[in-house]
Amino acid sequence: MKSIGIGTCIALLIVGALWAQNVTKTEKPSTGATSVVLAIDKGARWLASVQGADGGWGQDGGETSYIRTTERLESNGNDVANTAVAALALLEAGKQYQPNVDRALDFILRRVEASPADGLAITDARGTQIQRKLGPYIDTFLTSMLLAKVDGTLSKPMQNARVRQALEKCVAKIERNQKADGSWNIAGGWAPVLGTSMASRSLFEAQQKGIKVQEGVLARAESYTLDAITESAVPLATPAAAGVPLYQSAQALEQLSRTEKDRKKNAREIAKISAQLADARFVEGFGSIGGEEFFSYLNIGESLKRTSGGEWSKWQSQITRKILNLQNSDGTWAGHHCITGRVAVTSAAILNLSNGRAN
Image 1 (cartoon, helix red, strand yellow):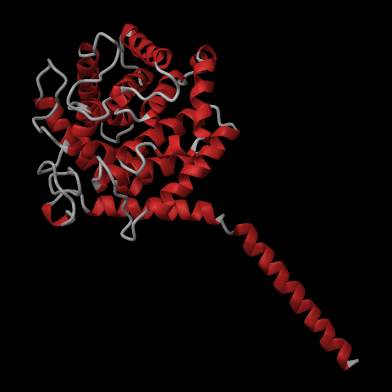
Image 2 (tube, rainbow, N blue to C red; image 1 turned 90 degrees about the vertical axis):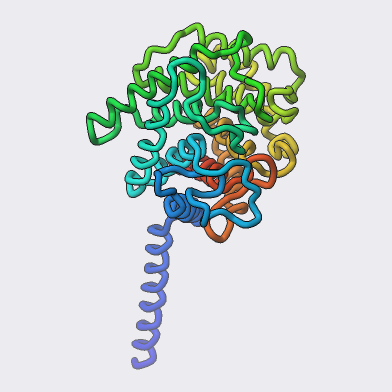
């Protein structure tokens, strides 16, 4: 009888342990999801920690003391483009970063408000790394994207009014300075097609917030995109994309897939571009990772997400693994060519990872 009792106790202990193990497995989030959350949090905490006293960020941080000794600065001080993309990333990272976003907005709005109505410039800063790579007016395009994102969402009516006024000013600047071919591929950038992508996208997103945008401007941007596909063999190695097919294709995929109507109308072109995603050499872009690759991945990911099919899941899984493997121990990401600064690259990495998490 004693041996039977002992056996029964052992059996009950085993069953209890197995039950507890199953409960634990059920409640524990997947390793992949946990890794993404931790990576975003670590990157966002670093971004917040290196914000400048003026509310801005520069190429490698917001203060001189944050800059790596190995990083070759292409300009000094904080700039609008890096500040705008950092604010976009922190918006995705969580409400705990709203104070940082508010300070960044003030940094940006003061410069937009002080800028002339004519011309594309909203800042006096010239020759920053991100300008030299994506075009001299990337500050305006990224600011327009940020302002469209936060328009109408802030807690103070006066702040919302200030954002709306600045957004309208940026939209008018972008509309008036579109090139005859429908692009914003303005001389002075290594891969200005990425600037064109952000300019066009910011107009579309502003339109979704109720800002009046000239339909002719958006139509010309689409025509430019279709002409680039028609006139170039796939992959699209155009001068505006620095001869890197990934950059032009990512711009085209985002431009042509914004609405259900767009996706139906441009189905053939979208399929042609999407077929390239299976080519590892195409996905590598320049051949090493820079900010340009991360911004292009973001364009592709957000385009595919609009239909939320198997193609999107496969792409996001692939890019998430790639980005997680590239994170540094301090939470940052840094480029290995062209856009090397930790602020822009870390911000773009967070935006890519958040894109998957939001799904």
